[in-house]
Structures are given as structure tokens and as C-alpha cells.
Length: 250
Length: 210
Image 1 (cartoon, chains in turn yellow, brown):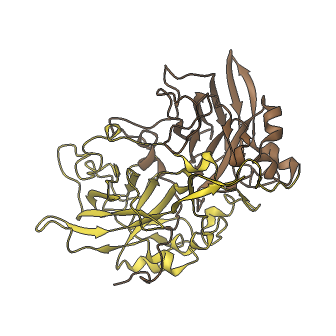
Image 2 (image 1 turned 45 degrees about the vertical axis):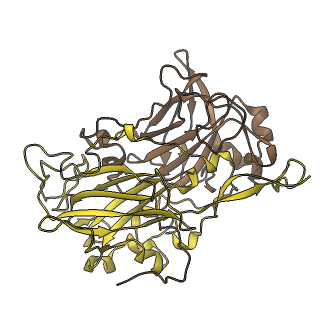
Image 3 (image 1 turned 180 degrees about the horizontal axis):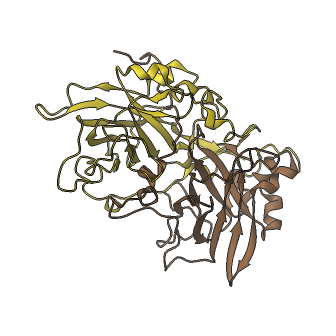
């Protein structure tokens, strides 16, 4: 019986680009990392599908962090635009991807019940936004540049300024959470969380570049941050006669 | 300007931990404020959804046996007929427009308990046409988790289907397969599946490299 092309399948994840679960320089990972190797699982429908989001689930200001929590004033800080393309490993746009972002305010303080850093809450800044990529895989949002802040890891660890990203692509296995850092930030070289990444090239991909062509004169600078998700390709699932998945005990 | 070598094909962007304040971005009401008009939630099954109503409830437990109280989970599952609400699912089965099959839950900041209100999924065709027992897919992120953890929950009242499931059977150690079985309880007339996820330790849950 011949094999039949059935559906999209995703490239295997190259784990050498990602931080290992156990990275003791980031102390919290010690008790929150599995000790067993993950079981390799080829894609089935459970892995190649994912929720589809629609524009009417989002509000018109959801990608404008300068205005989406403004209570009678504007947030303090450097006004910036952040934009980029979500593409896959074959350099194709990932359309309609849900991009969610969150960050500290300009003083390095998060609007969160568990954050008690001395820098003040900004009454006009919530610190989160969300958007869907367009047909080119492009996204854009407006915010203020987040500040660095200290955290308990070593006695005097500081996080570089960063924006957290969550991306839902077209397949469950593309689900990704990461962080954007800013070109030129001297704290990048000292950050215990960036150091969990074993590949220098992978770290460079997390550093947004100043984009002189995307700002608004006399208003905002811009940064460009592109994201790559795992590549989707047409593939051949096994026929029902040949190619049963190898079973280790049956 | 720093760029990756242009002769290379694009590589997947590296993961970074979701951090302690993941709720701000993904569930702001849990962080303690209200910002968006519509929020994603842990209730998957609206009033019209077809199928048996169930709750999936549990904790995520670290290597010291302490429940995580700042964890966020997402669930992705087929509907009661065993079909995913996605164009790549070409099985000849009905879609349920009242059921997308996706949700997001935060653990309680005191107890570490999280839950999803959903419907029990049906059997989905797996690789090579082999049926996969009813299951939900879970993705777990938190401070200290460097890359999201993928696992599945199967159902304790599906012993026969579970015994034939191609994914459970990939797990060489039979004793570890039990870490993926949610235990059905009857609570005031409602079906609750209890599913504690152990990140580390003697009962460590099976995670998948998907």
C-alpha cells in the first residue's frame, strides 16, 4: 500500500537552541525541572492542530500599552514601537498567530500582586497587550520601554530590560514563550536567565534591534523583533498497513 | 549590526521562562487587575457544547513535593466526537461550534490547585490510522520552567482504550504510564478527574518531546 500525504507536520525541535530544563545558574529551575528524559513523540492530530483565534476576541486598544490602561494620563517612560514578523523555519509567514506581551513599567515594577519592588506602580500602565499577525506574519504594538529590576537569584542579580512574549502559531507544537531584550543593554551579558541558552546565535535572536525606519518622528523610537516558529511541511503519515510506530512494549 | 549568519536557514526562536508574572500577560485578572474586554479562561465548554461535562483538576508539584502556586497551564483537546476545531483535522466527524477545545488556567495562589471545566473528548485517529484513547494535551509554564512542558492526560474510566493507545504504549516503563491517567471522582453528582503533575521526584510525570 502506498503512503499518502495527509497533513502538515512540524520539524522536530532542535533542543540545542533552547535552555535545558535543569540550569542551576537559574536557581528556581533546580526543583522545577524533570529528571527523566522527555519521551519523543511524532506528530499526530493532537500536535499539528491548535486553537484558531479571531480578531473579534481582541479589543481595539489591546496592542496599545500606552493607552490600554491609561486612567486620565499617559504612562511614564520612553515611548517605543515594537514590531516584527512571525515566520516559520522555512521563512514563511505565520498568519493569524496570537502574540501576547507583558512587561514591567519604566521603573522596573510589574503590576502584579506578587511584585513588591520599591519602584512605584504607574497608575496609567497595565503592562500587557495582545495582537494577531497579519497576512505577512507582521505584528506591531506600542508601549513604554521597561526598566531593569533586581531579582533574587544571586545576591545582586538584575534582569536586563525585557518584554515577555507568548506566541500561539498554527500547531500546538509551535507554542512558545520567550523574552525580548534591547540592543545595547549592558545587563544582557550578566543575565542568569539569558545564560540558560546554550547557543550564542540563539541569544542574538532574542535581542531586538533599533529600527530607524519604523519610528514616529518627534514621538517614538522603534525596535524590530522577529520570531521564528517551527516549520510546517506537508508530509507522509504512515499507511495503515506499513509503518506502525515502533512499540517498545506490546 | 548583529545578525545571525544569513546563509543559515531560520532557526526556531529560543524559549525563555514565563517568569513569576506570566499572569499579567496571559491572565491579567489573576495578576490582580482588569484590562481587556474579553479574557481567555479555564472554561472550555459553553452552554451549548455537546458531550459529558467534566472538570479536570490538579496541582503541579515540584521536586520538594511543594505545589507550584504560580503556574499557568493550557489545555488543547478534541470535542466529544473526537475532532479538533482546526482545518488540519480532516476526519469525517462533526465540529461543535460551541466548543473550541482550548483554555488557560492559573493555579490558586494559596493552594496551587488549577482546574478546567470542559467536556470529555472522543477518540481521535492517530498515526497510521491507529485510534488514540480520549486524552487532553497540556502545556505547562512557570517561573523556573525554561521551556514549556508538554504532557497528556488520559481518563481512568477508559482502561480498554488506554491499553491500546499508541502513545501510552511508547512509554517503555509501564509504571510511568500511570502518571498520565486522570482519576475519575464523583463530586456532588459531577465528574471530576484529578490529575496532579509531578515535575520531579519519584512520581515524575511523563513529559513529551513533541
